Length: 367
Picture 1 (cartoon, helix red, strand yellow):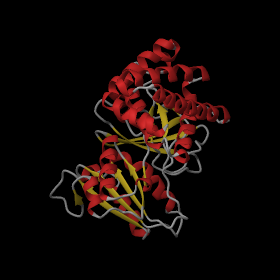
Picture 2 (cartoon, rainbow, N blue to C red):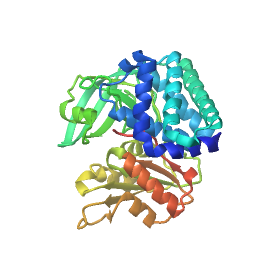
Picture 3 (tube, helix red, strand yellow):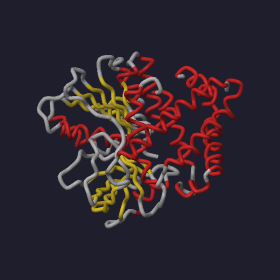
Picture 4 (cartoon, rainbow, N blue to C red):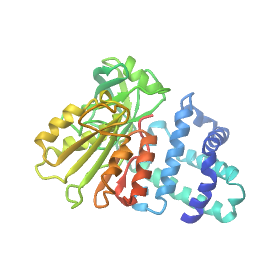
């Protein structure tokens, strides 16, 4: 099954944009009511579907990682009002889309493999959703909004009830300025006593939600947040040291993990590669360097891609800087940033000799 799925997906992946368009067109035709679950602008949703599919294909033979991911996805989808009947329409649309673009590689055996895989996926997601006794989403109020620059803001949310997330996880959020446009954001702090969550948001080109938050979020705004997702973490009981690789606001989940580790005296050695185009992009560098001064297990390496005269930093992309130091074969590697940065960095590390099972990242990032 694994081989058939991967081989057929290799045929389909060059047409991934067409696949996602066909999938949603078919889904809305089979189950018109599902259209109301999604925003008018479907561009980001289509991209998110592809990332989820790629992630599933990559982990299809690693059930210990795939199952928790699907369980989290099932719990998160409760916020849309998804019911079991929707999964049948999704499965029909997905197989139809893959079949259309698989060409001659689509056989009865391939169809059975995808159908079996989807049945397992849907069952795992629906069971997790049914078993979750928590709310489908959490309400929270904006209690702090600070613009660090024209395109960057820090926002604090105080939920009505503490969101049960762990440092390194992310949550989907819906803001009043952009109804139904859910986006994934990572808290930049570990859970606090009063439940306050800190988010770092950079306005990105074409980012309807990020631009709305940076430019127009107001104190008192009510946000909705879905169930926590993601499995990035540091095992303090492991004998392996850690490499963290953060691009821009991808620092947020790694910062939360570092802040949590700082509560303990004995930790693995952590090398944090923190990258941006220029030094101005490294908005948390000073705070991180101060943290490193009082925590000898932490080493911070600034990386600048487009600031060749700057001192005290490595130059080039994060992929350049990290692989310049070797393959990190005996380390656990956490990567967080834009999809492009993650893709490039992971690819370069694999070529350099980093074992795939040592590299950890989440499929959903800031859109």
